[in-house]
Image 1 (cartoon, rainbow, N blue to C red):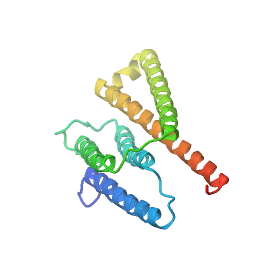
Image 2: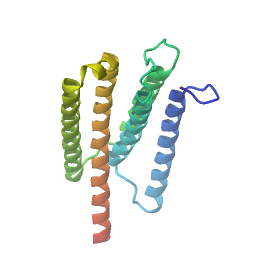
Image 3: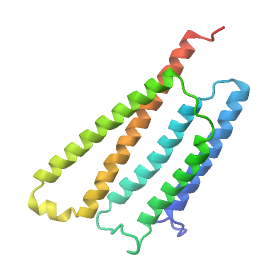
Length: 187
């Protein structure tokens, strides 16, 4: 799958992630200078990982929506290469993002713990549901689900649980910011 320009979607996704990261960091630097209301380093990292994970998850779901396409490398499409290209971009940019600061306080630890709990609960729930589906799937339908497709569905469940983790963390950061704004500036 690629656009009409015959440009692989993996490179489009990778470039979009790099561009969004650069734009966000520039915007947060401007907010720091003008208002002081930029997100802290841990929240910035969560935002980056949420966007990168959503990008990978969206590509994986779009790919799984076409079960007749062989996702293996070398089978006439670039879907697997696209996924690895976007993952490589995310890993590369994460080194830059993680160097920007990691100072945490008790608020961050609580938010990280809540997100991690939500991620693990969703992972376990997703795998349990998928296991029941696999165990009770009628034999006729089970033959159409290849081991490769089942493996990719499990990867999608893992990526979805990460996305849930980051979403919960972002919601908690937003609640905390709203609570701080309701109290007003401290003197």
